[in-house]
Image 1 (cartoon, rainbow, N blue to C red):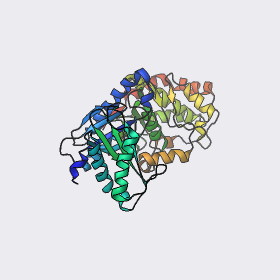
Image 2: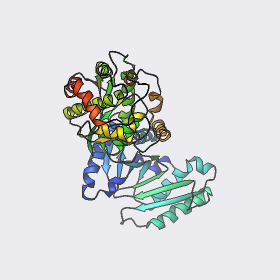
Image 3: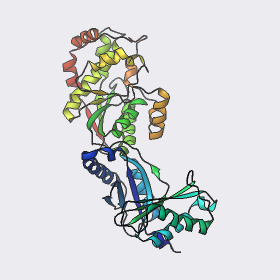
Image 4: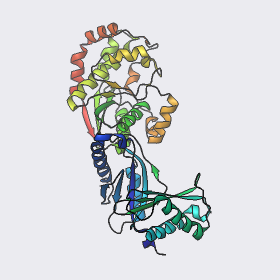
Length: 398
């Protein structure tokens, strides 16, 4: 048997909830394929991305190696909208060729060397293929059992050989990489994330990317009363998240003098909520300028004093744009676990001089009254101030 029995390496992508989109499914698929192509521009491998019935196939150039296919598979595993990524082999639509490929594929696995239990799962998308799915299972499975003496286990196999008969070829593979799931980035519009250097807001941004939003990031820096550390940290977090969507932009607002004005208002217990409202007003102004349709925060109900139900309501009152809070029902342990999984936790835990440290009253208000906050904003001329802050922003592109 020679390696040529396995044909050409490729990558097979399985879609998630996109398949439930009915008449709009084609729009979601087009967006997903565009996102896949954009993601693969970051690696130096020319590929051909093709839509099949219910799957997407990525074909590599002739002579490509299995290692190159693995690199492609790992890169697209970060693209929301996919649930499974399989490094597969593309073989001719002939039962004997499929049999030879199956034997060779199993023979190269560690599971075969240790006598693992196995199963063959076939799917015949092209009904013109001469063998039914269960017949192909028995045909290939029987040969594997004869060749390697592996026990068959159809309920709980340690090794699964998947065979998918498509329009022009047969795909054969074992295992796979879990995808991000969700919807393709950009299919739900654009939104602006209020990006601190903490743990919560990067996770909130990721969760909304998975719901199809392309997000920009707005960071409030304590400059000129703090250093640039928080900006570097926010930039590092955006770079880490950019692999999920591409073309990310970070906007930075020098917020220190505005905080000084809030402190000078004399409303110590309301200072944190007044600051949050001013941030939201400024974010709304920026969002209008960059055509974002919503704001995103990392708020979790009851996590800190500014996130009581009363205070969240008071913050919502500050703006007209919808405020999306994907973590509102999460606890800190869940948020940290997600941050660790997506790779932002280590960056978020780095020390920095956050702008919020400039307004840290001994006792913060947990039941802020909207009228009291509006009085503070009237003294500050908040409507004009948020425009001035939006005028002062700096853009950081990746």
